[in-house]
Image (cartoon, rainbow, N blue to C red; front, side, top):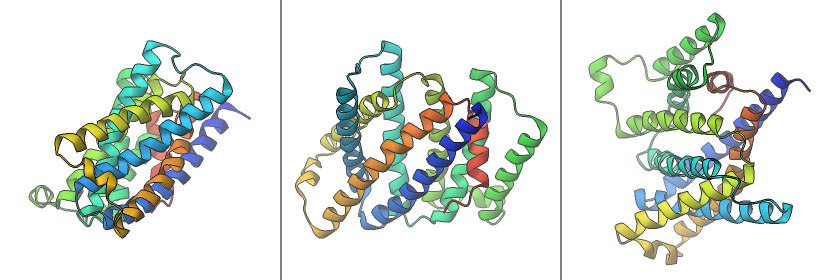
Length: 262
């Protein structure tokens, strides 16, 4: 298999997991009554990641401490993922449209291309830049071509979607920088950081009791979030493997923008 084929296949696999998580995020977001439930859902996801990562790394006889840099970058990825995942749920708490949200997130190709150029020296050719412009135009069209004044009056969930897009680009940069790390080591440390961030956030606002809430709606959030945890283990792994296979941020985002995601 050629290098280009490897990153493309991992990127397609990642796109599949992103589709699944986006649909499940919508379900959780509609079920959740507040941002506290969103933080809780993110925390449940991270518990699964920590357990799966620890189990696989231990079974394979690998070290959980491959180096300070790899562990630190995995933790940084986990913290950004905590904020990004929580916002992704909150978008739907605010009745966000899943199609528009997905198109807005494809705009992360713009900061992604900048990160690629500045930090990794990757350049886009003319056709790729045309693809970037098409993605931007598509996102603008989905928002019904708002004027600048209209854009500033956009619903809260639109701004949350834009913030998620920016954070997604940042995490792609972290992944590319940390592409030597084992996928399950990354899931362990990234998941652990997300878990700690979630518990601390709930502790600060005095909402740890959410873990003992077994109402019908919370049972639904427990179940779906746990399922998402397993899917996200795969998503993080495929994301990492695509960079190991030679991908760049902008090319991956360009592929996502051309796929029929929800």
